[in-house]
Image (cartoon, rainbow, N blue to C red; front, side):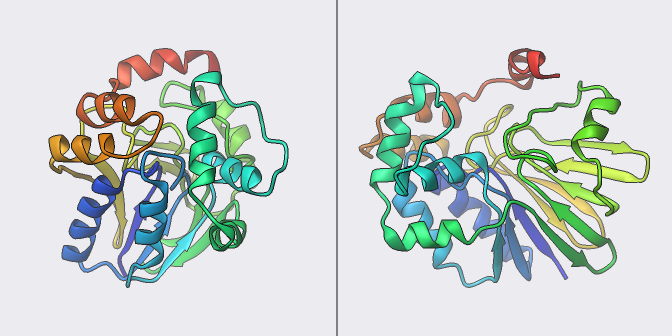
Length: 246
């Protein structure tokens, strides 16, 4: 059994389309979407594409999906940085009641039995919430607190948009990186689970993706195309930015 694990798409449909071409070529049996399908520059198109996939899939929500869902419900949301408020409101306005019901059905975590690996625990950020940040520089004792109670041998998380692999005792924690909004070299990052864990990076036509994104009405289209597709921030930049969360 081969499972493709896709995290942090963030409405980047061109990146997702490229990954799915590689997923199909790899003969994948099922998919796990690890949260933050939204928000992004192509929310309507991305949800429609994901919903129409022919490969069986399971989903968990990320903080972005959850915030958009609360906006659709007219409920108070966690404070959103000023730079992202207009984009978040625009994303919510692109969706409808069917999307609301679908997003509401996504759980916060998921545990799957994977032949040859065993039980695998999936969360968006950490085992205890969908916003907590840790990086490869975070001390082991702090990360252990974030995953306390996880009894599987493998845990998969995302949220920081950087691929990572570390072990804490008998628990291995992996992050596939981000499909649509990577921190590091341009590309779409994902993971295969079969006889083990395989990190994957899919290259795609970045210039064409930027053109498609800039053609949308997204308030952040230009910034997303420039800073998340053509020239993403480096891992070193983001490790420094996240240093206060370590």
